[in-house]
Image (cartoon, one colour):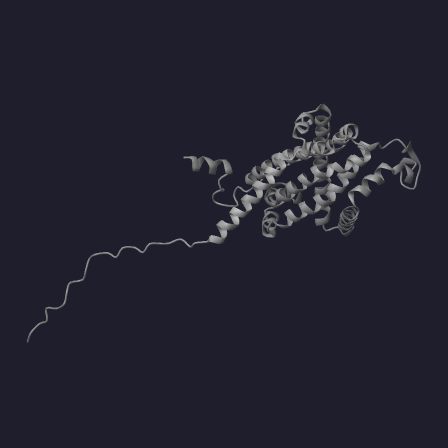
Length: 304
């Protein structure tokens, strides 16, 4: 009986890995080139158009009257945000309480002040003397202790602060309420089981976690408030926009002065956006195992 010798031992050579060819996307590159060309054309038009009068923009960019208007705009924005969120947090707590009267009052406040345009509110507060010539303070349905004339009591700046704060509080209440509702109810129940009071639970457990949802919306509200302060120019409050209006009403250089205000708004908004990014990053600790690198960290990594 013969044994076949045609069988060969198995080969030990490994097959070379197949070369991975990336998918070609010509449409992506074509669209990128088209967009870059359009951006370059728009930039060239802005730089070379003499109607923009960039020399005038540079001259008035750091003028004293413009810087004073910018300072007032920043002050109004900060004051409105602090007072608005303080009142808004109170309204959110009332809305989440179990008292039907407090819930109704909070809901009614948010409904009214979100329904009325901001300009109308400012005009109402500025003309409050026409509605209530005298303001009295005392016992309800009883004697008055103090009575004041309201004709000159509320000036333009006071009307602006009141109107902006009450308007901001209506939106801040919904921002805070949404952030509180984003926290799992099980954590509140566990804290109650441990004997913690509701006030302490709100301060130590709910609000720190709710900040992850509150900060992005609050940052958008801050930027919106910054730009919304330009509406106070209708009451002759000398903010950034009203300051440049005073200048171009004298020299009729409307476009370059409006560019001065525009550039300042862009600069301040960009700074606030950067601050919002790092505040969000701070409150995101614990939500992920590792925080994503910042743009500066990405740039250093690429340079290395």
